[in-house]
Length: 103
Image (cartoon, rainbow, N blue to C red):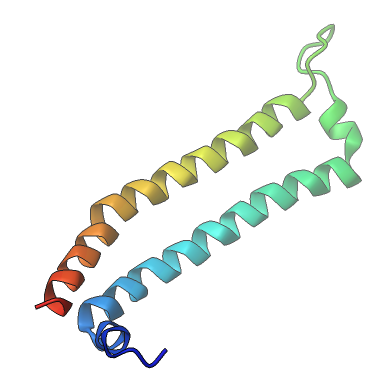
């Protein structure tokens, strides 16, 4: 990319700030999601008895159901968190960057 506007954006301090804030957050949330998801998959693969344990002595719902629901809710939660951070912080930085670059 040798476009002058691209070089101007990439060298702008606001862009550097945006990358410095956005990239670590994305990596952190990705790692957390991978740990939760693959942790659940490992439980399914290696400890079926634990997940198959009923919640109540005569119940039909097993421990795996609320844990699986927890994985889904965790995914929704970190997605909502990222969207809020992006809307409140990253979009502001992007708007400021575009204003400065398009002058």
